[in-house]
Image 1: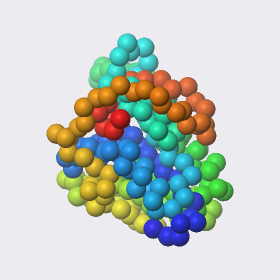
Image 2: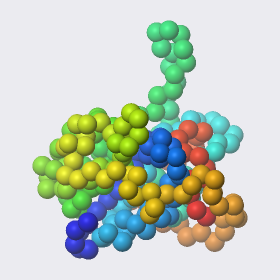
Image 3: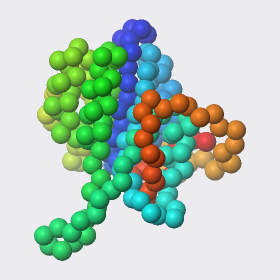
Length: 212
């Protein structure tokens, strides 16, 4: 990356990053991910976005969301919406694109570099808007899967594209080597830049996709 004086922020599309890593056969170690990008400059914020299903007594993603919230990430969630499509099938909708875009635009005057963990082509206009404000944008996804997880228009719009497979040794872990659970005690809460209600759900990454 550039100078250590460069201010950056991570914007992680949780469901998209999970699907990308899964397609390549490894887990994301979120502690290592944070350390890696902290070592590349002044990391101002690390946002993690995920939609959640309300009113579930237990969900496998709850420990992950809690861990991220207490270990340097700003977790942004919203409740999913259920609907029935034209064929009569029950569908669940939980798109976080608007929340991510609004946060990025609000922060654009305070950062030099945006790192977007997503391959969703809908973010191309956001990247273009950030660039007009003088923010350099890096997209992290993959072209190594079949089919590629990154939209071509998103990759081309970005100032830099990083194939996540090149980061596997720095931010990844083999799914068969997940650490044993340890009691979570004595945690220091990190004040959040954005205060939003945190709800939980059984969608997105597995609860073991982090280190205690």
